[in-house]
Length: 193
Image 1 (tube, rainbow, N blue to C red):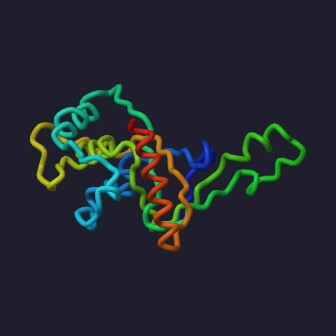
Image 2 (cartoon, rainbow, N blue to C red):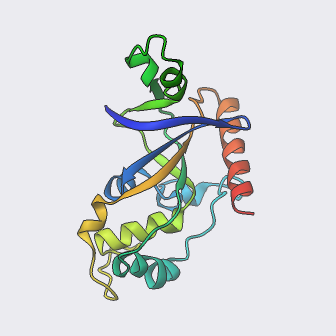
């Protein structure tokens, strides 16, 4: 179990958390949907991610990450997909700010995600960037072959990237699981339009 600093927010009906991760942690803790064992068994409706353009990742995005000191990209947007609940602890739960309304108000939605070691995330937005991080850090392609076009960058694993985690809650019944899937598909569709 780990504590990860994060901000809690709500937009529309979605609660989410904004945090940062080391790129090396991200490539291990955020799973590209196509890498799931059951990917080939999913229906078109369940496959709401696009196919990864591995050539684009290998020829353009990964080299950008390796060769450009001024590299930068936007947040990865993810959700937990292995039915593990995300717990949030506000700074207000940890520290008594007394009558200081300024600090009490400012820290209400700042705190920690209590990260269960079994928690895995799936990207709703950013799977090509995540794949590029993986190629750049490991120096291996989607088939685990050495990439000849560039040398891997071990230092990249320690750089921090922004991650937004949508809180989907724990789905226990088939209906709840279908609601989570439908909600994630709707977010994916909105983001990618």
